[in-house]
Length: 274
Image 1 (cartoon, helix red, strand yellow):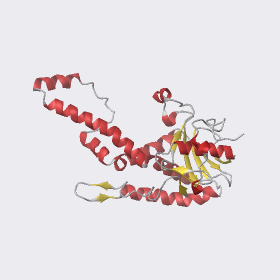
Image 2 (tube, helix red, strand yellow):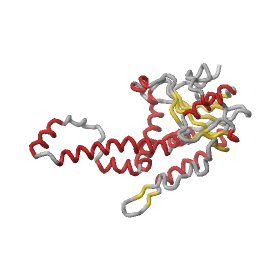
Image 3 (tube, helix red, strand yellow):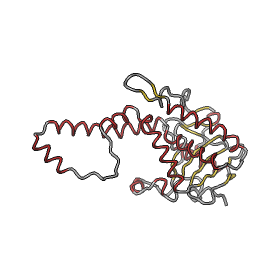
Image 4 (cartoon, helix red, strand yellow):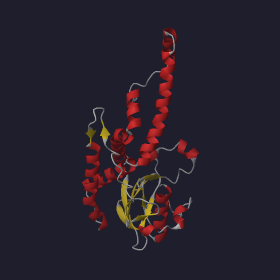
C-alpha cells in the first residue's frame, strides 16, 4: 500500500507506548500487550479472509484488537495531552492562588467547595501530570478495557463487509472510529451517548477486502458482500476521519471519499444489504 502523503514510519513511532519511570527504567508492558493483540489478530485474519465462522474467543480478541486500534493513535495522545493540559494549568493557577490566601480565607474557600460524590473517581495533580507527560501509556489500557466491557454489556454484534475485488477499502492513521448517522452536528454531540446510542457503530477497515462493523443491529452476525458504491461510502467515512494520513492502494484517491455527505442512501440503517 502507498500513502497519498509520505508515510514511512507512520505506524512505528519509537517509544509511543513505553512507560518511562523517574529512575530511567522503561516499562514495556503496554508494548508487549499490543504485540500480543497484533499476533492474535494475525491468527484470526486468515479466518476472516476465508469468511469462516468466528468462535467466541476469536470474536472477543477481534473486539479487543479493534478497541486497541481506536485508543492507540497519536491523535488520541495529542487530544488527551491538550485536554488534560488545560486542566493542569487551571489546577496550577488555583494552587498558586490558594497559597496566597490567609488561613481564614482558605478555610472559607474549603467550606464553599461542593461535596464530592462518594463513588466518583478523582485525580491528583500527580495523576494529571502523568497523563500529560505520557497520555497513551497512562490512559490506553483502562480505555480499551472499558470499551471491550461496554461492547459486551450492550450485546453489540460483529459484521464483516466484503468488498468486490476491484474496489478495495482504504485505511488511515485513525483506522478505528465511531460512526453514528444520528449525530449530525455539535448540538447532537451534546446529547450523544457514544456506544449506548442505538445507531452508533464502531467502524474498522481490517484489510483491503474486509471491513469490520460492530453495531447494535441484530442482523449483523455475518459476512456481507457489498457493492462498489457501498465500499466508497465506507472509504468516505475512513478518509474523512483520518488525522494526518489516509492510505489507499497505489495512492489512487476517489473524489467521492472527500464528500461530507453519505454516498449510500441507506447508510446508518445497519450493515444488512437488501
